[in-house]
Length: 421
Length: 209
Image (cartoon, rainbow over all chains, first blue to last red; front, side):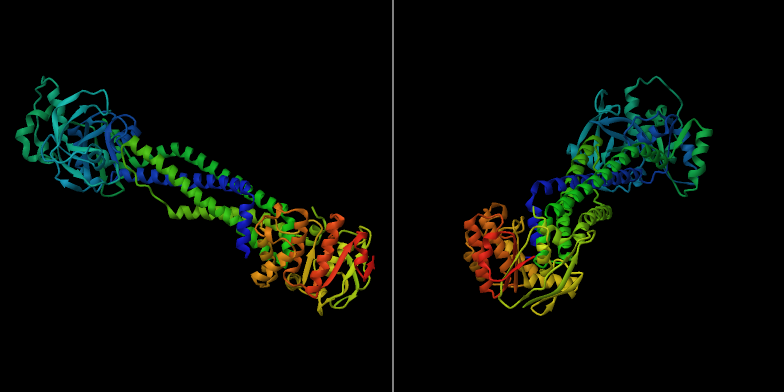
């Protein structure tokens, strides 16, 4: 027999009280851990999705919409801008990479993005199998898309007009898969990448060729990606030299200060800073996270009070038992240890159950999100935050235990033993 | 040997000062302390058991000056040399019968072999309920468990506070017989305080407060 054994017996003596104490504490721990983890993961994911994009240039409209559409690929674009005008911007010496992208189609809800070969570089994406697109109507798939539809190199599919899964008509010309990217856990994974010309070509074929605008083909030498395909493309694409937006990464962050203003004031386009816009967005959604966090703290306080009450009750209800133990020769410290062990048993099991609950909860929420946003998100366990939460819980519990244990130190054995129940 | 001289006690916040008559008992001698309630019987018992400290006077038990021990020494002394029997509460509620005996030995820092423990439970006729919880025992079994708890660590002095007040005549006799018998086996002093007149004839030494 030792103190631990007696504590365990006490722990099991009144299971309902013990259970209630553990329940409230574990729920608050689960909330705290879960919220912290999801908040952290979302933030990381948002930052992560920016890749190297410092600025987006697109049609005038809401800057947030532009960022959501062109960077996170979850909203509709603000409109199109003339490729010619965008090319003017791309000559800016401060610019490291400038990637024009063009939208218009989807395959079963996954967006098809027309872009240059620099696009995957923004996300450090590497080709897993196959090769990069080289001529129109060739596509390279993000990891999620390839996995979801089981598409392989050489497979063909038909895209639908528009960005949503339903409503658009199907295009007649099939697209051919020539490559698949490694998973990046970024927005890349749920995109289908193709050349700009594919988008132009698909849409051009569908319109009646009524415009006979003279073409200037010089852009092919400069920025087009099918530099060797002039013969094939120059007749078709000239009229629709429009892109949805231009993704820009700067050589020097100083450029962030002036360039956007210059663009907004001097052109018909607008420039938006994704980091700034997302931070703004985060401030709105952050209110919810903060509220829930405060609720979790409130629950933590309540559960500590519960632990205090249950330990205090135990000390009072068992005052005679404790006095008996003193009469058996137990010193104060042994009794304090006994009650403290009981508190630790409650806290320990609550922490384990709480962390387990939070992980199950977060797992299901992530599954849901992955399904909704069609993107895999790495589930991050933040040990540091877990330790922080654990530390906070231990501190609160220690405090409530100290209050509960105090009567033991002050206990008058003789008085308790002479006032028998 | 138990020897007290001029023991005086006063509770904090109370004006009453208890002055107790001197006691002197040889090894193995028993004593019955009688008195009306409120006169300080239990206080004297707790003074002898090291649960209270006198404000004046000396208490010597087996050569140890109990009144001048430090808190820690007192806890240890109490655990090893004193056995207390109470009127109603006899054991730790959350533990089983045999676990109670073992916990008692643990706090007393005594090691007693399993067979000796079982023998004691057998003598007290509670061996068959050794794995029962305390609340499952009958009144008589509880009282006998209380005696086991007061005896198992072989104390030099057994102090009983109204051990028979809530018992019928039959059980009263049995309990007194057991107490005296066990004290004799262990060569311990038995001091009983009571207002129960039924047990008066059993004792040679009596002290009226």
